[in-house]
Structures are given as C-alpha cells and as structure tokens.
Image 1: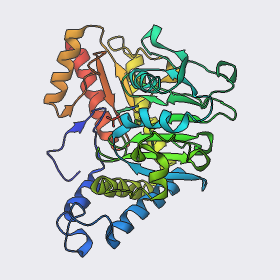
Image 2 (image 1 turned 180 degrees about the horizontal axis):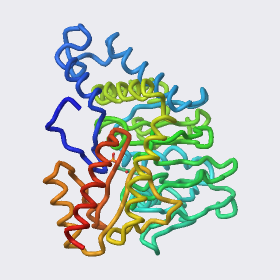
Image 3 (image 1 turned 90 degrees about the vertical axis):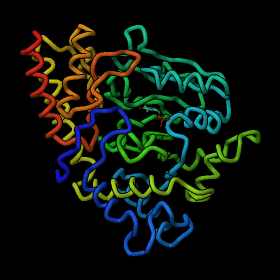
Image 4 (image 1 turned 90 degrees about the horizontal axis):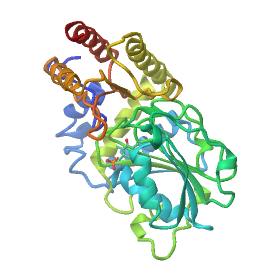
Length: 363
Ligand SMILES: *Cc1c(COP(=O)(O)O)cnc(C)c1O
C-alpha cells in the first residue's frame, strides 16, 4: 500500500476498492488517457466512452465466462430496483413466482414481487433468524411458476448457497449483489443474475444484470419503458445517459481481476481469508459464529461475543486501530467483517491479531 492513511474498511457496502484501481483513476481524473477531459465530463456517445463500456462488457464476459446467449446490462437503481424489474419482466405466463426467503434482502424482493403476481414463499430460514440456507428441490417448486428467486449471498446474515438449486426448465433468478466475482459461477444455470456494484465491483450507482436472451420481451404494455430489460438490452445499456463514471471504475476492476489471474485465482484467496477468520472464531470460546458451517459466506463473516456491550466496545476499539465498520447490520447487532475481493489478506491478519488481543483483555 502506498497510502499510509488508508483504513481497512470492513463495511458491507460501499466497500473497499483495489488501491491500484483508485490510484490509476486518480492519475487519469482530470485528463483521461490524454483526451483532455475526465470520464465524468465526457459524452456517453463519445468514442472514448464507447470504448470504456465495450471493454467493460467484454472483460466481464471473459472473467465470468458468460455464454453468448446472455445479455449483459449496466443499469441504475441499485439491487433494490431489480426487486421490481424482475417480476415486471419475468411474470410472463402464469404470473406465479416462487421465492426462497433467506434474509432481509430476499424478503424485500418477495414483498415487491407480491405487488405484481401470485408469489409464494417456498422455503424460509426466518424461524432460525436466517442462520442457514434451506435445501430446496424441484418438488418444492410450482410446476407452472414463471421463475424461482434466490438471494445467493445474504449480506446481513452471512450465509451463502452451498449449491445451485435445480429448478429444471424454470428460470432461476439470483441476487448476487454481495458475492458476484468472488467465486466462479456457471452462468448457464441461471435465467437472470443481478448485482448492485458497491459491494464487490465498483462505486454505487451501477447495477449489473446478466440475462438469458429468450427471457427478454415479456414485459406487459403497462410496464414503463425504462423498466423493460429489452429497452436496455437493445440499446447496449445506452438508452439514456448511463452511470458513466461507475461503469468506468467497474471496467477497471474487471481488468484488474483479469490481471490477477481471474475469478478462480481470487476465489482461492477469498477461501483462505474467510477460512482463517472462521477457524479462529471456531477455535475461540470467546467469539461465536451462529451460521451453519456449510452455509457460511466467504464475503460477510458474522460473529458475536454474546454480550452486546462487549460487541460495541470491540467495534469502537477496532475502529481506533484503523479497522472500520465492523458492526453487524443494525437489525441484528454483533459484528460483521465484510471481506470482499479488495480486502487484502493483510487486513484479515490484522483483524485476527486484534481479536486475539481483545479476547485476552476482556475474557
Ligand atoms: C446491498 C444489497 C442489496 C441492495 O442494494 P442497493 O444497491 O442498495 O439497492 C440487495 N441485495 C443484496 C444481497 C445486497 O447485499
């Protein structure tokens, strides 16, 4: 690290970006690659921006191995707007969809979809405060459902699907806001994948949508033009002014991932980072992780001391040592270390050292 003032930011989002990407963007801020202006100022119809968005898509396709029959779109409105766009576009025949509720984000998506059709919760882990991922099989799914919806990594509770649900011919929709690019994914198993950028990709303001082409074109006549995926797919994400700067930074992150050896190489590091942290928590009788072992997230590591005041003290003292935003989500308390792709191993090591010291001082 060249900038000694930088903290380790364990926030669930917005979160850390690779320092080399930030520094490179800073060097190009006023004069992007000699074109005399910043990416924030240039026309989205310019040759320069055209190359930025085309490269971003090409690199994302390459690192995620996205099949040709999938459209990639860079949209706005965050993960949250997708909670509405998904049902508005995919409730196309029976107007039925089946949802798996594994946390607050999945629940919000379910509630939004329920405005537009016959939406059924086919499994939920709420009775156990979302500490595990339910097993769902084809038998749980209504045979005429238009799609099945899952939240693949549950940012608040720290769970992650240990399997891709088999939905047969029924398209599977996945919210991957907090795990996209952290692991290799077989895109062909999904009908639609979406992810807000600010967790693992880039700045807030851009949302990635990866959608199987044959699912386009089913939005009804009353669906606003802007909320129809087809509008964006047919215009290469340039129906109107896109979030240019966010797309540019995301594109730089994609290049960076390529240079680091791809998503598989990153995943190895992620497994090591999360493994160290979980191993330490499990070995300690001071900290506990409430999440079922096989369902634990690589990205969001949730833990508690069992004493709310001690948890608060932990968060405050960690902050004083340059490790910020370790508090759990306001709805569940405790601690949460979000260790996305850009969190270096150094940050995880420093956190574990701090945890040991805190344990020794407060046991
Ligand atoms: C953060 C998050 C969202 C909401 O994202 P916004 O971009 O703030 O709308 C949705 N789903 C998951 C899994 C998230 O982590």
